[in-house]
Each structure stands twice: as structure tokens, then as C-alpha cells.
Length: 276
Ligand code: SAM
Image (cartoon, rainbow, N blue to C red; front, side, top):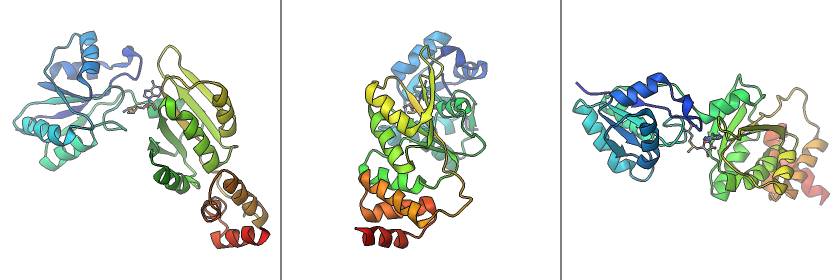
């Protein structure tokens, strides 16, 4: 009979957040697959758990994944851990779960720390419907396309971001959604310097023009307002012009403004061109 793959969440900062069940599982399995064995050894030492470790990360998952599944099929049990938080959520694991599902190996997810859900719950923004977006694409073109596709998203959105990309990402979000949109910047969650800053995107851009971003961030961005009254052509043209000022070509600006306002893009395009 095959063993079980356990997805074991680990603390996102505060070691006290490891659950009893997570610790018991790490102590009970035959081996542990870790994103970075050096990081996980620290947690295992803290828990006084000694287990054989194998490495499973973004760059070796093609070779490592099938080997782990082979051991599971032979009857061993395995716990998958990443550097912090829930495995498979913007972390290695998705591929291993798929391999297990295909091979008929049972997978058991243990609930626990996840930066996205921790941030959403404390954000002060609507939590009833949300869209997890993880990291935005790094490539300019894909990033712009993703943001364009999100322009009319009415659900609260969750983004992960590294500190050295924060300024650029705030600027991109402000140009895609408008400076008045609300954002909660959730920094260093569960750590000594935890900070929840609630403001508009325009305020966030100017705040971080003067303050060096430090630590880890989850960005919770309010969804687009539900449209109750039709937007006037005049306002649609003004929005198109604002997007052009932020660097979009007229065609792309009209397309995005059309998604946001519901006015056909050809109408916006024609109105802007006729005013030139
Ligand atoms: N799987 C993890 C989870 O469940 O939270 C997320 C891993 S992802 C590679 C790492 C990103 O999560 C960071 O860049 C940051 O956006 C967010 N993050 C992780 N820990 C955080 C913390 N303590 N405070 C704020 N954001 C955090």
C-alpha cells in the first residue's frame, strides 16, 4: 500500500505558529522533502525532530518529484515543507501534488500559516470574495496584460511582492487601477516589526518614494467598484487620457478604460483621436 504525502505549513515568521499536528506529522513521517534543507533544519532542530531530508525546489522538481513519488508508492510517508507558509501556494508543491494524484498516492493537506490569508483577514478590505494573484509576472508585456485583465476585477485582490520590486509594483497598480483605489500593505506579518498600512494606491506610491521598502509584503488591493450608473463618455475619455499619461499607447489606454467603464473601446479611441 502506498504512503501519504503530507503538505505541512510552517511559520511565516513566528515559530510559535507551528501547529501541534504539523509538528507531530514532521516527527512521524519517514522522510521530509524541503524547498531549502538549510532553512528547514533550523525549524526541525527547534522541534527536536531528526529525519532524513531530500531537496525539492523550483529548479530540481522534475528530477526530484518522480523520485519522491516512487518512495511514496513503495510505502514510505513524506512531509513536504517550504521555507515558510503553505506548500503549493506560490511555493513548490503544486507539481508534486499533481504527480501524486496521477499515481494514486493520497495527499493530506494540514491547515496552517499562509501569508495571503493572514493579510486578507487583517486588511480591513472586503473578504467575502477575493482573487489570489501571487506574484505579478516580471516581464513587462505579460505584467501589463495581467493588470489589464484585472482592471475590472471586483473581488479584493491579493499580491505577493519582494521589497526590491515594491515601488515598481505600486506604480503599476496605481496606473492600472487608478490612484484612488484602496490598498492595505501588510508587512512582516507575525514578526516583531509587523505593520498594516491602509491607504490609497497614490498615497502608497508617494510614501514609498521617501521610505525604503523593507521586509516581506502582501498587498491587498480593493476590487473595482460595482458599476451602478453608466459612466459618461467624457469621464471615459478622461480616464483614457490619464492612462496615456501613465505611459500606455492610445489603443491600449482605450482598451483598458473600456474594461473599467463599460464604454466600447472604439468609441473611446475615436473620441480621444478626434480631440488631438
Ligand atoms: N507559501 C507561502 C505562504 O503560504 O504564505 C508564500 C511563499 S512566497 C514564495 C513568499 C511571499 O509571501 C513573500 O514574497 C511575501 O510576499 C509573502 N510573505 C511570506 N511571509 C510573509 C510575512 N511574514 N509577511 C508578509 N508577507 C509575507
